[in-house]
Length: 201
Ligand SMILES: [Zn+2]
Image (cartoon, rainbow, N blue to C red; front, side, top):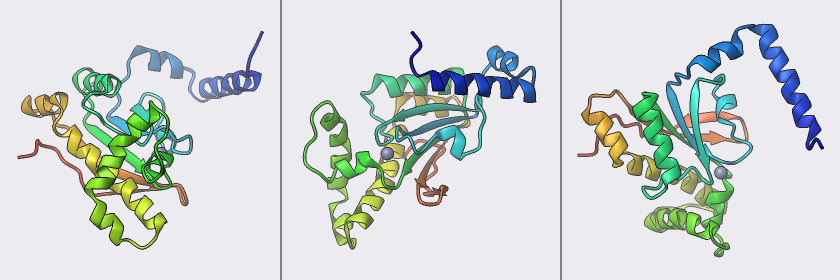
């Protein structure tokens, strides 16, 4: 039995196109991966990391979850970080949020069922922390969009304290962390200008 035949057909076409363009393509990718970037983004299907920054397979190491959250107690995210920093020696970490993020919107709504609610509670905490600023904005959309941005900034703050990152900086590893936001309406990225390349003082 062959499930989802269209996806296999697409895959075959893609693989053939790659080889036609570059006969050694897969051979080279098999040998080594040397990405310069770790992308921490949302699972949202409309924000595909490689596509929106025009990078090919092998060029970006990717971690995605609902609302691009970095948790010091999430072994999945921490393992991705450890591998990408210690083994792959990546030099840039990009936390990329996006406007109209459903995970962020959920933090304005009633409690979801677990485990999703447990995950969203981290965003609710950021929302609470910035209550006054958010309350001062005009309209639900403005508050939603601002929380999408504030969430990215909060993840950078957490990343900066994680042992993998701090130890890399202590070793003299040149490593920068960036906060970006992607706009679904025009496909453009914006730098939130919160980049850091050393521990907080
Ligand atoms: Zn999202």
